[in-house]
Image 1 (tube, rainbow, N blue to C red):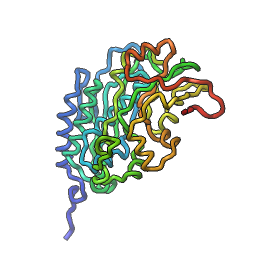
Image 2: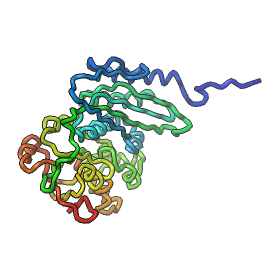
Image 3: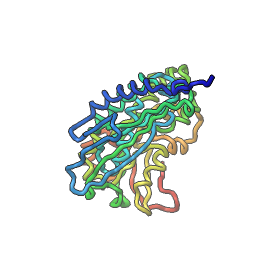
Image 4: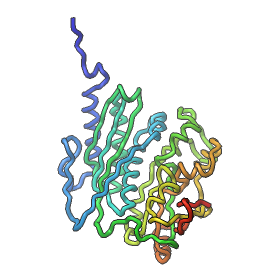
Length: 337
């Protein structure tokens, strides 16, 4: 007798997938404005684009990385949805772009509708805060690729900026001032090293550290901060911005500097949050490695003319003057003192 096989028997449950999509839909709908002509569920998300003279579309894609392992170990999924939206919004903000719409990709070894809904809840919350439509995405169950409760979360964003308002750092020159806005923690980078130092078991993550004032896992799951709303009114006087993600200040700031220029940072200008000091101490990590892996308390770098510093400081009381643009000598493009 020939055996009959089913998709569910192979590990893919179509009924659960349908349920997960319905749960996503209700949260995504809370982000829609009149520009959204079709949202989650159709074969393509439709967004009516108008109101710009010479629009430049700006796109970005990124993932949450192994911060997902921390969230999974603690059974918390909503914060990672916030993480990926804010990360992508910040990326396109560096060009002066505002977000239009966002798409997500959620892949799991075993589909967990409740976890998917929690992720969608976080996605929708961050999209609403940024004025961005959660217009579509993909939910995949792939037992042959992801083991057990493993999953992945990726985000795709499209934003827009008028061509004459693009921020690309071309006007930056030696003597310009570097400002820093504080991060809310690790944001979405460095978690592979953190997991190597502390482990990823629930017991390790639930350990309370006096220097943190709370449990380790709670600090590690603090959502990635979004800088759109505080920076939006100041974009006309911004010369350049760098979102401090993987690679830290060392790799990210040179991406916006014209050839022949470098950045000099004074680390005493800001307070490095306790979580970074704890990671360095527990892992016996070299200082340069810390600044190459983590944001070290600075989530967004802004470069402006000296004459605009007072305006920035009054508009952004939490901003710190953390360095200046200098002429490059040799191959070094970032100096950290």
